[in-house]
Amino acid sequence: MPELSAMQIFLLLLGAVFVNNFILAKFIGICPFIGVSKKVGPAIGMSLAVIFVMALSSIATWLIDHYILIPRDLTYLRTLVFIIVIAGLVQFVEMVILKTSPSLYKALGIFLPLITTNCQVLAMTVMNVREMPEKYAAMGYSFGLVPSVAHAVGIACGFSVALLIMAAIRERLELAPVPESLKGWPLAFLLSGQLSLAFMGFVGMMK
Amino acid sequence: MPEGAVKDLISAVIVMGGLGLFLGIGLALASKKFAVKIDPKIEAILGVLPGANCAGCGFVGCGSYAEAIAKGETPPNKCAPGGATTAEKIGEVMGIKVEATLPRVARVHCAGCISADRTKYKYSGIKDCVSAVLLSDGPMICKYGCVGMGSCVGSCIFGAMKAMPAAPPQIVLEKCVGCGACVAACPRKLIELIPKERHIIVRCASRDKGKDVKAVCVTGCITCMLCAKKKCKHEAIQIVGNIPVIDYTKCQECGECAKWCPQHVILDLRVSAGSEPLGAKPAEPAKSATPPAPSATPTPPAPPAPQQQAQPGG
Image (cartoon, rainbow over all chains, first blue to last red):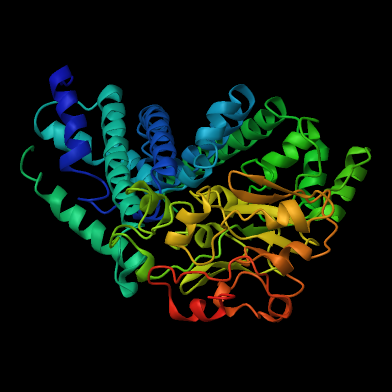
């Protein structure tokens, strides 16, 4: 089967950012979306950490899936294997960063352990080896390592976009005269609903 | 059991077990290889610090302050909430002698009335002093005094500032640790940290001349110079920028300045409780020896009623 072209990979990435936005269209990874969106600063740190971890774990899990699980017909172990691989990998990366670059550790450090067992990372890796190859096989393409990473980065960027929009709005709302009963969480939930509605408008722009 | 199932089982166990073993050993080795040495002093100092993360020391929080002390970059006596005992304990950890700083508390250099009568326009923006001051020096007619939006109250994580109706915030002495968060929060720079055991405070920050102050405030300093020139026997008061500034190293707390101040700008906290607006001040000590200076004080434009009554000679 032919590989995906560069344009197709770009569209895949763009689609993951806007059309199939993990948070606002698929509702995966809501906890950091609500939890870390109070201020823009931490939201940027979290976004960078997610992009980093997503790209890394998509490579690791794709390799393990293709060279260990598929040849031995053990694909039913994917969830289990992926969880420990991602957790181990993130722990390892955290140690390496702490040793080699304290400044990078200060920026990402506290967010890395948070993402270790985050649902979006697992969902992304499982999608990369199960749903996406099936979808592209039907169109006559193979879904290799490069599209997997592009897809993962796209999803992470989509998460970042949603998180940053949310954080910026909530930061403004801190100073706004909001009815007492709506302050804090209720308003955050209302907001995320409206953001989701807005992003639903992208559905259908891309297959 | 069919042979295929056994084979599946074994390969699953091998893959999972192998992966677990590989990751476990790998992480254990990595933690040895990439171990970062942390100064044990940091932990010890962190244990001594109060952990309030108030940032009064000038660092982000207790953690970064502890790090800086351990490296010897900063003296260990900067922790306001911890005070002398904490400084002493840190000194023990570091093996150095520490000179403790005197405990200080925040004091507001304004006693002006914050009511609609004293505004020059109706402010309906964000309830925040910094924003309010950006708009043509704030809504109050005095451009030096408290704007009363409570930015300092919001900045205090110890609950030591109490927002007052129609007056600058009151400081709850028992709760104030002197971290200085409110000092930084006030756009007018009205709050100062003053040694806790000192009782003479100045409650005006207007740089204007007496006549101009009179026009906008009933409680402002009119720069009569009585305190600095005549009443202070210890040369502790100097008039800087048309307001008295007390040198607490020279002040002997005799209370003469507060007794004679015609505007009650200088206040003796042993006589009066403090941050309440001037109208509530018990006037006995002043009344007993009413100063003759501002005897024919003209009524200032539209002052709030209770303040007018307590005005000596007014």
